Image (cartoon, rainbow, N blue to C red):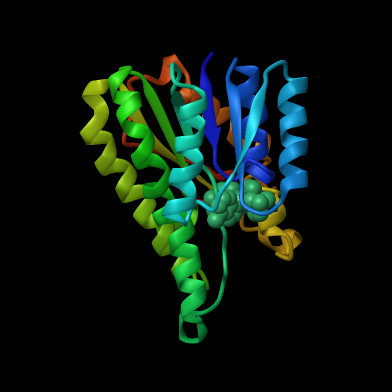
Length: 242
Ligand code: NAP
């Protein structure tokens, strides 16, 4: 059995990644924080794709919850390890910096950056011991170029990119790769409320991307074919930022 953990697997890009990695033969651990019903739907789709999996409810920004959930999984699977981690859970709380409440700064940064630490750190040893691991994190075009109204989100995603590059150097010798993907606008709940008609005029491809397109890129990065790609950030944005 090969296991992949996808944080924020209940909806959007995370769900598409769960289904795509199931198609690649992985048993899928679907993490979510609130939306049990949507997480169950993802698990159904994983099963329709011919694999099994389980739900792992925890808040990635909470170290205790995360460690408890991962330790419980390890206890139930003493001879197995999670060889693929997709750090996908993320939130946005947009506001101009002059008006941004502290909580909106903290929640966004904690979900992405503490989340990266909380989930990645406990899984690394097993990946290195088995001399195979794949870590892919969902960054954003905002983390590369910065976006007005998203100082918190840009800081979190920029930090995630830097962490990806640093960790990749630590673990490359152990055949563990660490990469990030940086989507532009992808059609999910996260972009609901944005003016798609106006925004797509700013995108050379003249459309938002789909979660399935991002999932395809993630599936390539976790595959054995991508073993020589590490510490990199791959943009997927219809030409929005090149
Ligand atoms: P989404 O549709 O809003 O889904 C977010 C997912 O993250 C949900 O499954 C949610 O779980 C989970 N989540 C949120 N906070 C969590 C926490 N503290 N612990 C565990 N899970 C948590 O988002 P999306 O558009 O698919 O985005 C996925 C990733 O891609 C994010 O990191 C986002 O920043 C990044 N991204 C998205 C876009 C875009 O245009 N959509 C662009 C660039 C980057 P519940 O269902 O339980 O709430």
